[in-house]
Length: 466
Image (cartoon, rainbow, N blue to C red; front, side, top):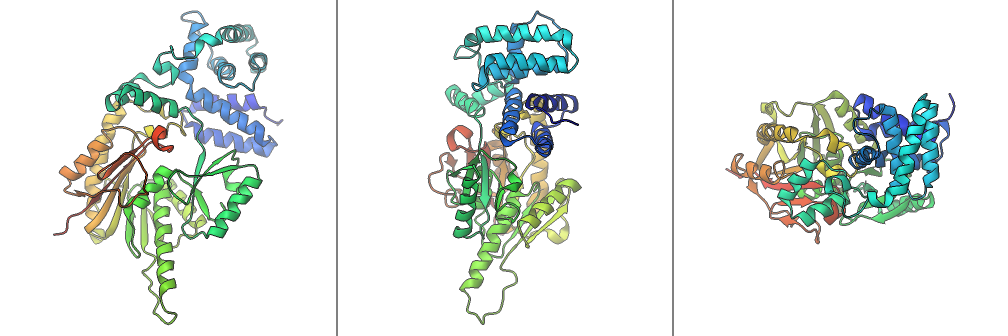
């Protein structure tokens, strides 16, 4: 088998997503990993990633352009439509690609896929796009097309925010996001600086996170698992907004944490790392002849529904050398085992949600979710919360979080926890870094255009004593 070209690889990704319904980030990784093994260099793989993600991200807009330059009711074969989408995205949004190259490569790709009769059609459409591209993008374009966002999501956010705020949010979701990483709490300053220096030397751009000293953002990355420190478990990929969960928990040494929907394990691992670091600090402060406190490292119990996801947690835990974590398969909709009632000092409920806050990273979420699904998620979340609360000790802390931007799953769910489950709202500000905008009592909705992170919601509650 010969080497795959950049545009062939992009077309393969788009075709597989269309045919299988798989999420784009999974298919992109699979194809690019294979292309790397075939010898495709880093710059070429970056081109493939940018092209495929851009086509997926702007599909609504691009398909509107296709309709503008084709006859009404014209039947376009799916592979030809994908080739047109690729060509249009390059013409409108990839300045480094000459318009002539975008057209010619699309025609060649059409011919190579055995659609020679469509080559003239593809050439004609793309040449017209080139001639009129100045009129195709700009302030006068309707918001749903301009930001390639389904109209119902825009309407929902306009009910939640002022229109100008919604527009900033929509624009931010189209920006290219860096990779956010979290250094393990046990990683020394010297280790961290050495790793960051090595990353920079390999061509990766590194900058500090917005709020947390152990968070860094990487751009120009390639093959994350090959970067220094990853295999050694000194850092892991996690968005800074998600890191706020362990901060909000306000962990103390030796505590028991239960995470009811834990996969892929980022929050569980963060809590475990903090507990291990607290245990190490406590032991270091003891006299040499003091008895060892075997409970000082605390315990984290990470549960998830599927066997595959639990194994993924275990794999990540092993890489990060987290000896205080146990991962097990458990249905969050089932009642808490009697022996485990009242055992959690901290209960993490990062529940299944619509995922609208991570559209900037997983660009096809907006095409998979629907208003009906949102309405179905809310009762599911309530059922999980009702079943999970018995884990909590009296005086224990519940952290409810989602990676979405939707009042029904966020602020209204926080009201449900208070009013129906009897937990007491507890202010977030004492636990989070200073300077984070948007904290309202025990709740925080993080937004990409405000915080520079994923869209993420956190709320904190305590279980009343007695």
